[in-house]
Structure formats: C-alpha cells, structure tokens
Image (cartoon, rainbow, N blue to C red):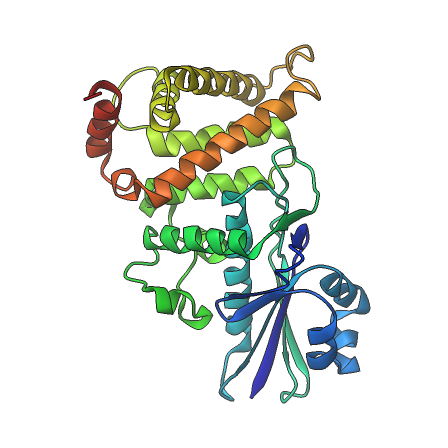
Length: 329
C-alpha cells in the first residue's frame, strides 16, 4: 500500500536553483504542488489541521512516498522518518550557524481509511545568539552536511558496520546520533565524539547565550580532556589552540578566547552577577559567534580528519596531544 510522509522545516530557505534535493528516501523541496497532489483528501487536512498544513507549505519540507506491506508498523516508519530528517537538520550547523528545526512529521496512508500517524519531537534549535532567523542553504551545502553526518555515523557506538547504502535507506538505519532514540544509549557507553555531539545538541537548544557558551566548553572537555592531572582550563585552551591554530598569533587568539569563555561559564554556573560592562548586548553575541565558529572548526576536523585519534583511549589520546604540542618536527 502507498504511504506518504511529510515533515515541515522552519528557519530554512532553499537557494533559488536548489528547490528539489534528494536525501535518503526523502525529497527536500517547497511549494504546494506535492501537497496538492498527494494530500488533497480533505480528511487529511481536517485530521492534521489547516494551521499545520499551512505551516508546512509555507516553508521547505521533506517529502517521501513508498509502497509498504499490509502489516507495516507505520508508527515505526514515521518515527524513523523524523529521526532521519532531524539528523540532517541538526548537521546543517556544521556548514553554518542557523536556527532550522524539523519537529513534526505526518504519515498519510489512504488505503487504511485515510489513516494519519504523526510524531512530534521538538528540537527548538536557535542560532548562537539565541535567536531565530531564516538561513539560506544551497544543495551543495546540504549535501556537505549529509557527508559529515554519514562520517559521524561511522563513529557511533550504535551504528557499527553501517555501509553507505544502508545508511541512506531510512528503514535500515539504526538509532541515530542526533535524535531521541540515540539518547537511550547509556552516556558512559558513548565515545568522546558522541558525547561532544550530545552537548552540541543541548547547547543549540539553549535559549540563553551564557548557557550556550558554557555548554560549548563541555564539548571541548569531551574532546580534549584525559585522565592526566593539571589545570583543566589551561590544558583545554592550549590543546585546542594547537589543534586548530595555524600560526603563533592565531593560537594565542584561540587560547585567550577559550579562557574568556571559561570565565563566563564559571560566573554563570556559580550564579554570579554578570557585569554589564563586560557582558552586554554587544560583547556577548560577539563572544558567542567566535566560540560557535571555533566549535564548528574543531568538530569538523575531529570528525572528518582525526576521528581515529579522538576515539582512542584516554592514555593514547593524551600521548597524541603531547606530541601535537611538543613534537614540532
């Protein structure tokens, strides 16, 4: 039997010439044509509500249609659909900052008396300034996000031995990195890259800039700490500076910026008043932008270049960090 899935996206604009992008079993598109052709039954609009339907067609949306067996669990099909779409939307951040969200999906099965299954998993991602605005993406940028997502899946404790063909078939994907099913896996069983992505998701959903910056520091600690003793703030700042910085001046700038963010985190987490002369409507967004860009550079390099090193044991990664800093040959 035929089933149709549709998931609206907020905060996303597609580049003018990129209005139909294939991703897994879905097409990322916009406009009323598909909705008019596949969801024309008035009963569908009545079930989901005219307001929901208008919100979907006024923004880009994921659409999928396929044939299923009569005994198909359409709740599971719908659940996997929202997980798949939310993962891609989550990983758009790796291309550039945004406040895109895909929170609700509908599966419509005309042959089952017009049955509709809906699942809502709010993400509430905001940009690094804790605000919301539309951001335009090209097809190349969206596919770049998908490439990073695929590579991250290979590092996941929940997705061992997943090949690219099965990854891009939604019904064969295991629990993902960025959505609710993955959160059921025990925190301690996750590798440091997975833990960092979880903190990234939490930071992006935070609605207050100091909280975002504080959680970004947790990302760095997931990736750059080990069991060795010493000043954790100095250690993290130094390691990140050497990992990302290409020159002396760049490393010093990164080192100081991370220390600045740590000072803010300490004051905020300890409930201290934030001095308006230091932390205000100008300086806080500037610091958030700098830290957000730094997180993006770090995580892309970790996932795409050094994933083996960052999924090694604490002892081995500590040795690797020392060589990175002290072995300059």
